Image 1 (cartoon, rainbow, N blue to C red):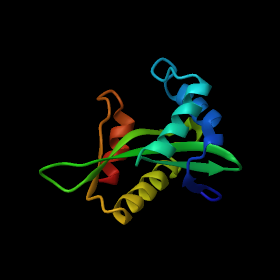
Image 2 (cartoon, rainbow, N blue to C red; image 1 turned 90 degrees about the vertical axis):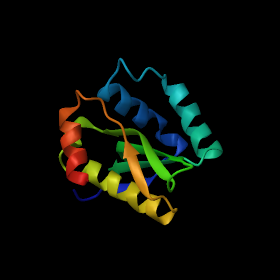
Image 3 (cartoon, rainbow, N blue to C red; image 1 turned 90 degrees about the horizontal axis):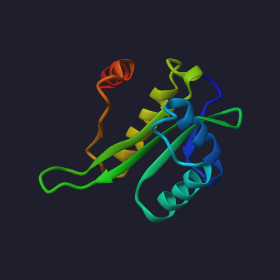
Image 4 (tube, rainbow, N blue to C red; image 1 turned 45 degrees about the vertical axis):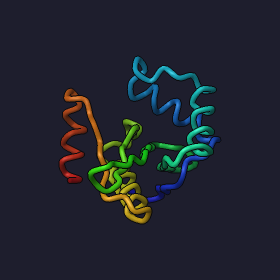
Length: 133
């Protein structure tokens, strides 16, 4: 899909991320807009997490949130904590762009792999993840 930019999240993206979360699952994502803003500020200023957004025409249409974790028995991994693409942009390569960008970031920063947990009911998401390897 042309015209999409992948970049690090900014605090000013809070409203778009709030709306993405509400669109995806309003009963699960219960944070207010202000709480989403506070959380973005905290994560970007006080953790080693990475949040990437996909942007089209000045609108955030997806995001992926990765968090490092370190093991005593294996190389460090990156855990995907959140991954949402606006419904009308799904199956158009946006999710793949976000995953690919996160993979590049993980490799550049010395992580040996990425881990993701997904609810069994999310059949379409599982197919996407299986295609990505």
